[in-house]
Image 1 (tube, rainbow, N blue to C red):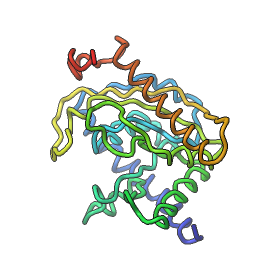
Image 2 (cartoon, rainbow, N blue to C red; image 1 turned 180 degrees about the horizontal axis):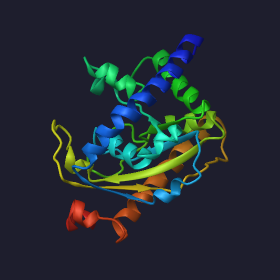
Image 3 (cartoon, helix red, strand yellow; image 1 turned 135 degrees about the horizontal axis):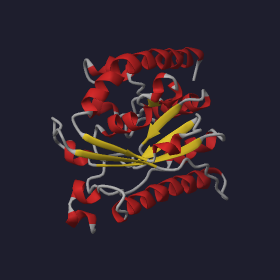
Length: 251
């Protein structure tokens, strides 16, 4: 990255915090009130400091709204490092009037199958953000789950984590958004139940080196989320039965 690109990231960081804190947060709070959104284990955020990567399962295009609310509201007013950067797929969001909105909500567009030069620039931006002691939200699956369950993982997150040695992984598991905005739906279905489960922050290591270490760390993250999914369906603490029904809960 050159100096101009780094400067633009810093400007985006400041302006996006102002936008999200004073415009985005109140709107998000009002939107969330249209649902029964329950956040579990928020006490696990105590003492959490950036840089960290929030990793979660991916069900819909609006997962980030509920996760950002669970993590940031209202703490991001006095803890701006809790305000997450996001990596939306460019073709889903970067159209017309959405472009400045996405820029102001701390988004870095990702293009699937992009040329190596574009991939490197996006990766360098992510690493620079983390090295600047900020936080970013990454979906390890890379795309939305079609089955509702965690399906697969990409290895890029492990390689990013390797580049920022003091980084922490914060796992989060979300359910219910697939009932709010099913794939191919345009308008959200209101008054649904949403569960957001915050996991324990982790520091990850690997006995491997190089590319194999990146794959290993990605696999560890994937396994953490799989374990959270298993716990979600087996524990009576959560609302899996109410949200998904008995049949789906027993799968």
